[in-house]
Amino acid sequence: MSLLFKVEKKNVIPHTETLLIEPFKTIWNRDESETKEFATEELSYIEFMSSVMKSNPFSGYSEDMREEKIIQEVITQDYWKPDELVRQGITKLQELQRDCSPTYNYFISAKAAAEKMQDFFNTFDMNDLNPKGFPLYKPREITSALNDTSKVLQNLDELRTKVDNEVFETTKNKGQKIVSPFANPSTI
Image (cartoon, rainbow, N blue to C red; front, side):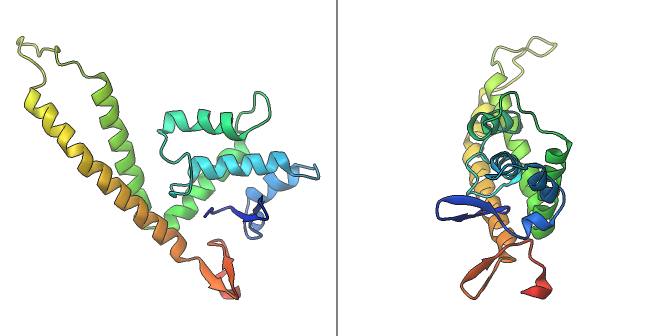
């Protein structure tokens, strides 16, 4: 499930509520084409850059790789770069997720820490020496850290599931229709 979109007859369409919120409304309206292809691409970029949901195929990428992959897979415009409105959209969607999920910030922090550990494992050198000429890393410390990795990954997965549940806990069913998390609660 997506925060910004619904899928209807194999077409991706923004939720009505999405188009009532700035900057999503302006992004949609500035694309004057009939198909709204560019607006859909930009909203997709925002969704994929921001959403931590398991349904986001790019959520597993590290921060530094995600943007490149999304632009490569989603954006059809040559030399496209996110402008200020798109950056505002990313910030807005992150804010909405954060407000819907008390666990969101913990997950983001834990994911960043896990990525730093991954970088460490990719770059450390067992031959590094401290100033006294002794090994900087003990094999036991490295193997212990590697053994803890599966626990870290399991905890990350549990946090992500909790965020999924918290964000969409606000999504309600009304008359067999799914109501977006952006919906005004007084109108449900």
